[in-house]
Length: 392
Image (tube, rainbow, N blue to C red):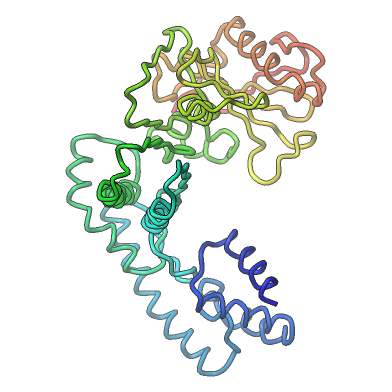
């Protein structure tokens, strides 16, 4: 039974986070109710708003439970009013979400757990920490979470007055909190006398926000959420005393696969032959390909496949739709750095064909599966220009 319970908890942890022992016990009770008395679960689903369901996991429906729900629902309505006022004053988009595991800031917990590992091991340790704090910067489960970042408001307002940006206020507040937690982590690492032997790699898995000058309707194509604010991410290595970056001026583009390649290179670990990433300590690429199938599954045989190709001068948005390649947007990013003016209809055939040739050379196997037997070009019947907007 214990092994089965661990499996069950593991499944839930993978989906919605780390649980306390109390929460694990409640989940066990909920599973028991679902197995032995499914009608009680159905009654709870009918009577309790999904927003609050997590707060009543493991409990049987009763008059007192429904009364507690109604009181909690009323109190939550006041939180929503505070949310509305705050969003209006500070032009942000916070959301109070009540029914969720009440866990502390993930960066705080992860950094604390990492320190425990360092105390237990004297050998070399590689630790990968992926914080979701910034991803969920506008979501709060209670007022404590909210006030834990509001204390950084003066600092953030001063910084934002000096450096205008399109990021939301809660994003910068959360970033300040991560910076604060990381400073605590560094101080503790110093006391453990391990900081001198450490190398830090700080990265982002994707960008955030939406340029205020860009049409909001362009958000509907999830596969084309590949503008500079989504793709440009930091990659900080500290300290870096033993290496000097030598990146050729005509070829200094690197993609997310370069991160792992660079870490392996710096740590002198051989890269597996299947890895396609290029270390930032080597020559980069002339064009970067970003690809996806939009929302949902990645059925490359049936779904639209979105490609964004970025060079130093241009950025092309195109997609495979059925057996055709649709060219949708082209930006001259050398002059149009915010990627606002679509010049797809005024561009030269040479620029577009160079992009298409590169795409085919790197994704030949994929394109062949969708009917492209040779390098696609503008004069081919299965290559079409469909500009979805021209200017913002």
